[in-house]
Image (tube, rainbow, N blue to C red):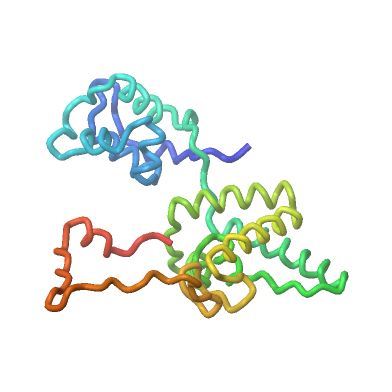
Length: 237
């Protein structure tokens, strides 16, 4: 069974005995459990729209509109052992297992006279759908990079697969990743540096023809929007 996400109860100072649950308590619980907004919405069964309403500065002091959500927040605050979200592993927790099985697989391949490339940090990054430098940033001892929610879940299932299936599970994972790479005109074992760029990328066989415009007409540039500005901020890997 996967370990559950249980924070330290001694660090919680949320008194809900004499008052109803308010929107600010959702934000406090999010910080305490160290969860993304997406995970908090899943934990509480909320839509993103409901989350935004409850945590809006104009409503954070108001009791929640749904008493079921209020009771759920109260239980999770007073009894953290009741939480049902798994604790997603870090890259540092999964990489040693991956490295050991990769070494075993490489030794078996050499013993059978087949060439199997060493699966190190570079391949670890690619097998998690990221560029080759990601693992080094995740495994940094001083300031490890934040892992994107999808990659955190991928680490979780990879760890489970490797623990249950060993080298065979890793071989299966590599084969599927290679299939995904080939579908994108790439190859895991041929100078691939990223899923989105690299020397292994092949040219598109049927490129889209250029758009022809009438003389004297130019395409107007799009105006910057708040969403576009927000997208320019660094994201988790």
